[in-house]
Image (cartoon, rainbow, N blue to C red; front, side, top):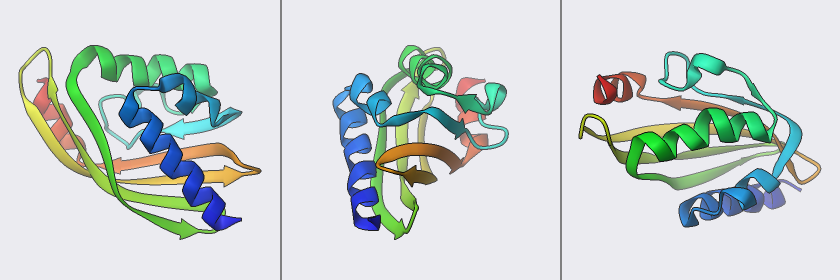
Length: 132
């Protein structure tokens, strides 16, 4: 089952990269618990519970506040009912014109072919500086 979990998460990143947010949300369990990194600019509403909360609290804000924001997973690690993604964020803040290029680690929890949880780790200072 764990390779299926890796494929599921790969598909989530591919859909996000295409801008197909409905496809991303469709992979989430209705009770998903989503956490942005502590002190991250979108951690103010942690935990986000449910796909609608993730859409409104994270994805909509990313789209409104960043130009060309990308999430590039470079490695997906099979950890059974968890998938760890290592990669890079990049984008330009629309309000300040400041660019970011920051490494990330994402820990996805998967059960029964559904995304149950998400935990982000990244360079929170780089993002805080970009929006200041």
